[in-house]
Structure formats: C-alpha cells, structure tokens
Image 1 (cartoon, rainbow, N blue to C red):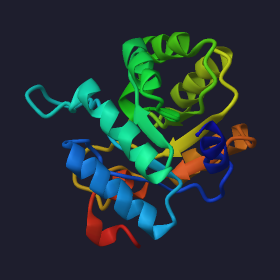
Image 2 (cartoon, helix red, strand yellow):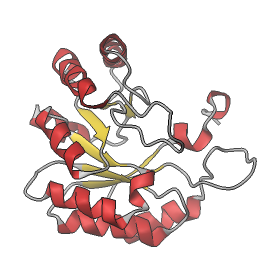
Image 3 (spheres, rainbow, N blue to C red):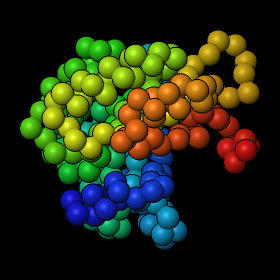
Length: 208
C-alpha cells in the first residue's frame, strides 16, 4: 500500500476527497466506494478529530473511526489521510496505517502544537500536508513547514484553505491568493493544494 500512497502523492493534480467528519462506519465505507467508482480520487480524507470553535460541538468520533478508514482503504485501494493536532493523534493515526497526515489551520497558528506534532514525526516516513493558518500570517505557515522539515519529513505539501476575516464576506475564508502565491514562491519544490470547500463554505459557489 505504501507504493500506492507514493504514486498518489506524485499525481498532479492530486485530488483528495471525503467527508468533513467521520460519523459512522457505513458512511465511510459507502463514501469510499462511491469515490473509488469515479476513478478520480487519489486520497480519501475524513475528519477523525475535529477542533471546534466552541465547546459542546461535535469534536469528532476519535480513535473509534480509524479502523473504518483502514477498512475503506483495504476495500478500495485508496490511500487515506487525517488531520492530527498532537503527538498522541499522530501515534494513533500511524498505528492504523494512515498514509498521509495533515496539520490543520487551527494547529498551524500554534508553534507549540506544531512542534509537538513534529517531534512525534521524528523517524517516521510519512507525507505531511500543512494548511495555512486561520489568520493571514505567512511566517506562521513557513514556520510550521520548517518545524516539520527539521523533524526529518521529506514529503511536505501545502494546503491553501483561505483565511478568516471579520464580518459578512462572499467567502467563508478569504482566498488572499497573493499569500498562497508567495508561499509557493518560497517553496517551489512543494505542491500546493487548493481547498475550495473551506474557502467557499457554500455549495452554490463551489464551482465558480
């Protein structure tokens, strides 16, 4: 399966798809099969741990959902990816053979959290995707990349998911394309993936 994951990582464009949150085993298996049937999806994503803005909201199914992803991978042959925000989550994800890890926007803003993830990645050969921070701070994004690279990770990719802004705007997260372009200029060897779902926040403008 590592060969499959490496092949997927080298694809351009690389298409990652799947539910924002893993909720049930049936949901994950049915989604994986439907995505596999399209022949267009390279990596299956699902939120196992969900960092929410306010307490009391659904914060993810947790470790219970990782066997579902492993089963989906075995069923379809599609590599998997999940978001990790601390060392324990890295360990749990790798124990269930998750192929690609990603650091979310809310984690990228915190150097302590990024460093904890980076420390857990030492000695591990796994691709890591790093989302831009929620606020438009290019140095935080660059710093997260540097911390993961110093941990010995060779395969690092960037995810542009837009930036938070105050008030009502057309997009849920403002694209601020100039920041994504500058990040790519600084890291020409790294792929950058656009995350239209988080930028738009609405289905009706997703294809615009």
